[in-house]
Amino acid sequence: MANEGQKAVDFVDAVLAQCQEFRERKFLVVLDRANKDNTLDLMNEHAKTTPDLRVIWAPENRGPVDAYVRGYREALALKPDWILEIDAGFSHQPEDIPVLFKKMEEGYDCVFGSRFCAGGSIKDSSRKRYWISWGGTFLTNALLGTKLHDMTSGFQLFTRDALREIVDRGIGSRGPFFQTEMKTYARRMKVAEAPIQYRAASHNVGNKQIKDAFKNLWRLFSMRLAGRV
Image 1 (spheres, rainbow, N blue to C red):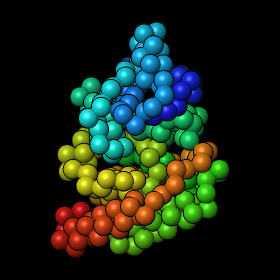
Image 2 (cartoon, rainbow, N blue to C red; image 1 turned 120 degrees about the horizontal axis):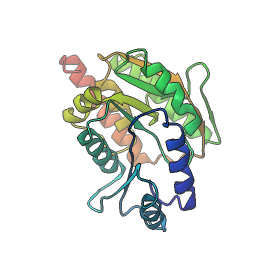
Image 3 (cartoon, rainbow, N blue to C red; image 1 turned 180 degrees about the horizontal axis):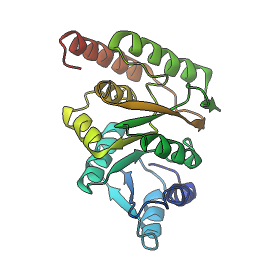
Image 4 (tube, helix red, strand yellow; image 1 turned 135 degrees about the vertical axis):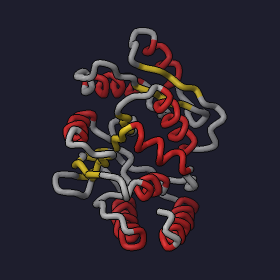
């Protein structure tokens, strides 16, 4: 989470409202030096009256992947049954959370939110970003043997054991492709997709990120040829 302002408070409350059926729940928010506004102060203040909110300040992070991995490891340390990953700022809709929960109850190891499966949608995003996501999914499925409709979404639900296995393998990607890498490591697990409604303008994908994606796609393809994924 970074630079969300008051919207961050509203988002935390909206997510927790969708998780009331659970006996125990904890919302972990990871912030680092990418945050330039008052979001950290707002989260710390909100945590004083929201017992289910925990704010993690991680100034050592070198980029967004470090923030995600820190969040995964902090969540795993709590030993929950399930771990939900969701982007802040309402790009992912909290109202879609029960859809993932319902699917997970069928006994899956991972449930991945999908913008491109039946019932999913993507709006207010650039045409370029749309085709990068769709094309990246097509290419990844072809080369890595995955069979998902959306390989780049970051709205997903894991069992504790599944996420630990993925994280312990190590994530080599330094850009958005890390979501694809995680799904690739899960390809031999019992996985499913659930439709989500993506509703936000996406950040531009730069040439450096695209190069990182191709570099790591080739790395994973080589690992597949060697029987390691």
